[in-house]
Length: 126
Image (tube, rainbow, N blue to C red; front, top):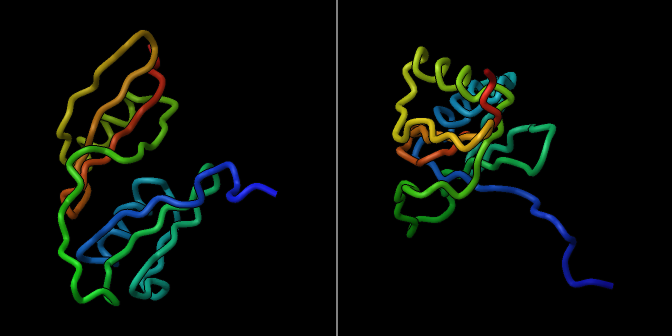
């Protein structure tokens, strides 16, 4: 028997405002959102691909000091990177790194409501 399973179970996003972040990430991923279902300290987004995305406000950790993550620690995937970029801009999401393209693949970074850097990667559709 191995000590651990071969995979990543979840990714934590640390926040100061659980409801605001849960709503923003739900919007970003096109997931339904109900304010009444957000209960501190964490909110798990029901993603259907990859690992869980857990948003954590640290309400049970009085010694926690929030610091935004400036270097992306995970990324979301898009089938149309330029389309995703344009939609983020039109919705007022702060883009903090423009699209960088290598062949038909690329990425850009945005800032979540807490100032965390989030990377969006994907295919560049011609």
